[in-house]
Image (cartoon, rainbow, N blue to C red; front, side, top):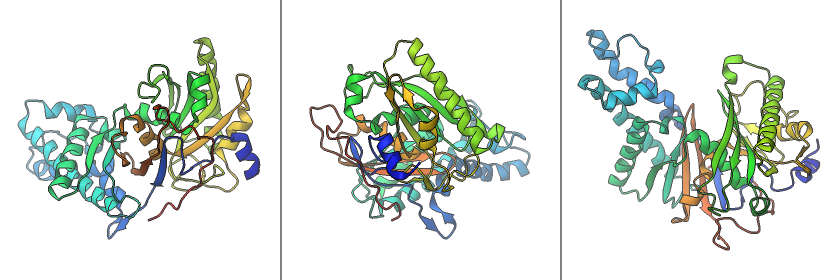
Length: 374
């Protein structure tokens, strides 16, 4: 499908746009390097496991490792959270030591972001991703905030309010224009990751909260594609099947489902829906010039209800951050860091609101993607 035809078909806004209904996206997917490689690798969930392993090594040599033979990357967040409130003081001390070292790394990485031009004057940073969905993640975030404030940085670090899995879907609401919420009560959302693809019916609850703060994921479907190692074509077909199932579910439940699909996807998203870079963990080659996910989905699902389907795709860190829009109205400039396989990032500036509903009324204007590198 040609680019101009794609834009007309999707209609509402360009993919990867810098101008969205509620915010301007100042930057996303910035890749900063230091002498050891990409900065984000220092504050990923894998980095925490490596730090935990380093603290276990001396204890293991003396035969006193409280975690026994279990590899550090196999210890669940739930089990580590239990250790924090358990009776084994040595195990608790090991986890706290790892949290402190990780918090120092997170503070270092955050400091580097704050010193870039794109992140200047950031007042608040929301931290999401799978690592946040744990008590140890919350402690690490709070500790990193204390470290930064002790150094004179006037920035708040707060855990994302929605469950990170839900946030990646709920944020898709903020890719849509205001009129959708006046006519429909739900949308379809997709969150594509290096391990899972999650789809959901997102209930807007717009009449209860026009700022979308009470939105919920009514139902979701998860496919762990990393276990199946499918081709790109098989992955797209499975995604289409998941969406078709949710459309049927929404109809059966009596929802007024909007003819709109919001997609969160890793990487730098171009205006035509192609992926420039950053999709290396997805099944198959998603960065190919011959592949366009929104165009493939429009072809497979041309209509939702009686209307032509519209699709908007953006970076997954951006979309997860967008779920926080209703709660960031006390600041002008804010960002998001998502701690997962890597470190997603985006910086936002709030737009002027009208009618107090948290959405800009002139939301059909296409945004233009700014440069993504500092």
